[in-house]
Each structure stands twice: as C-alpha cells, then as structure tokens.
Image (cartoon, rainbow, N blue to C red; front, side, top):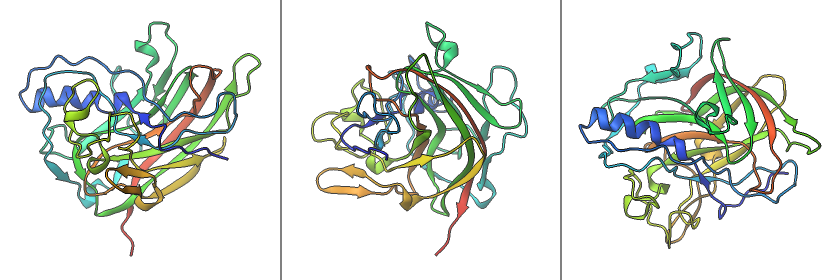
Length: 295
C-alpha cells in the first residue's frame, strides 16, 4: 500500500533548472544560475518496502538573477503527442518538444535527477534514447526521479490528462530489499506553486501560493498520484482530476491541478530518507501524449 503524506512534500529541484537557463536566453536576463539539489518524493517510513512518498510541491531550481516570463502559452491540437522517442537526440542532448522561447512558445524536454554524469561519486540516474524509448537506469541513493519541464506556463485545458507507456524493475543492492515497483506522479500548476516571495533560495517562480510559514512546510503542494507498474510495458492514462492532494492556504485541500496553468510534470521514485537502503532501477518509458478532453 502506498503511503501518501502531503506534509512530506516533494522538492523537484531539476524541474525548473532547465527553464531558468532558457529564461536567460529568451528573456534577456543575466544568468548566474547553479543547479539545485535533487528532488523529494516525500518521506516514508525508513525500511518499509513498497511505499511511495506523497505529492510534491513546486520544484527548486538553481539560484540566479534571471527574470522569469510567466505569460501563459496555450498548447494546440497538434501538440497532443509529446514524445515518442523515435528519433534519438544528438550526443549529449535530451529530447525536446515544441518551442524554446519562454513566455511565447509551448514546449519543453526531459530531465532526470540526480544525473549520474554530474554527481561527484558518479552514482545516480542515466538516460538512454538510442532504442527508440526513454530508458532510465541507475542507483537510487537519495531523492530521485524524472520528468518533463515546460519552457512556459502552459494552458493544457484542451486536453483531459496525460498518458504514457511504462515498464521497469527495482533491484536490491546488497541484502536490502528494494521497495515495491512504483512512482509518484506530480503535475505542478501555478496556483499550488510557491510564490517568489517565499522561495528558500530567492529564485523567481510563476507560483501564486503563499505558504503558511516556509516553502517546505507542506501548505503549498501540487496534486499527485501513486502509480505501480511491472516489467511488462503497459499504458497509464492519468486524467487531471486523478491527481489529488493539492494544497494552498488558507483552506484549500485535496485539489487537482489546474490544467490551464501547468508548470511541469514529474515522476518521483520511492525513497524513505537518509536511513533508506539504495536500490537499482531499470525503467522504460515511451509514447508520452495528452489524453483527449472528454465530457
């Protein structure tokens, strides 16, 4: 059974970091950005196999002085297919979709955290796209996950949700058993994203949520959903209102994301904190697309 605690919030650090770099290019701001720390999937009981963390709040990117353009950009019917990974990106690049001009174009790309290539001990996650899929492998040794960043706040209200094909396995390291295979999906929207006045590192956001005390006190949280999968690929269809648990003061609880103001889409791997044993993951994702809007 999944343990879902809104108070133990997710910090999707690399979720915004790629966007900050684009802001410096597209908005003309100066950039002194540094990469943020890895994201949280929510705290679970240490050593308890088969639990996933609760829903996440807005991610933390690197600090910097770049302005952020928060103009909402609508997706179109032509954007229903997000990524099918049929064309591998150039060496060192990641797949992208849509455009790159923040505040004027819908678009984005993929990210993982922590990225093995940038970790001091060379332990973390790696992505491979050469097989026509998004193949994520590596060691989960701290809060970790993957997702889609968006170059602009996106109006996705013409779609009913998102679907993707996923399969994978978790493998023990040493004698410690891995958690049950699953992820927590979070869709960050600006009503539930912390505002710029309350970010822990002083970064700019497009959020409108003023937390009761601090960014990480759990009062600003985005809707999420726990998802299980196996070693056989299966299609997951997630409607916007399937993601629940969103919070924002003073009294809103249990909300789903607002599809007209989406910032990012992320999947967090289970992790119970510093006392949890590491484990290996091997996950394959394909055919990411939006669901049609249905009555």
